Image (cartoon, rainbow, N blue to C red; front, side, top):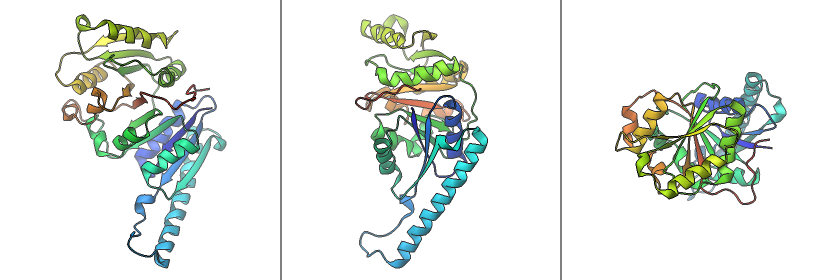
Length: 291
């Protein structure tokens, strides 16, 4: 069983993320948790006594959230052709970040899916959303980020950006492997540098990465045309028909810097593809395999 959490604010971007996830993991027995967190809308002051009016407001917020969750459930069941028992709706008074962290633990979540409202389709624009905070705090599970109102299309080419300095997390790589096996996609590791400058350690880590994908096409591409790593990666994705970009997240690595480099915006304002962010470490005793 693969437990997938989709955080929603009932925007078109959030529904797009839900539809993308339900399409990507349609086969199998994945369980989809659709969760709305309305804690940010509760404005009761910590310095005042919670009065009757505030309680009524909170009750209305709860009812509105529950109703919108039910409407979202009916819509996704209709659009995805999946049985309703594949979905569970959750309406929470918690704020977004603590609510997500709580559900990851309590529902044994394997994958978090988020849409990005007002996302310009660039790496840099993600920093303007809640997604960066989620990545920094949540991440011992993979996070799939769906930009804008991206339509679901079959995956043929998955790119994995890496410095090849660190050893890979085998549990995290199972998520990519499962996606690639289901779609028949090939995988390209993008390394910002020259082949002649690769160290023995980097070759060892690449071969280790490749050994996790037996039966799948895996190759290594070098991208060293620009000073900015994000620009090199974005241009590779743009010119090589990549349908999904994956990265393993280390807080102080080049991957974390991708979210603040503004140069990507200059390439193509309409560049749009899903990001799969993998944790450097997995939850203990956790099996990420999709069944």
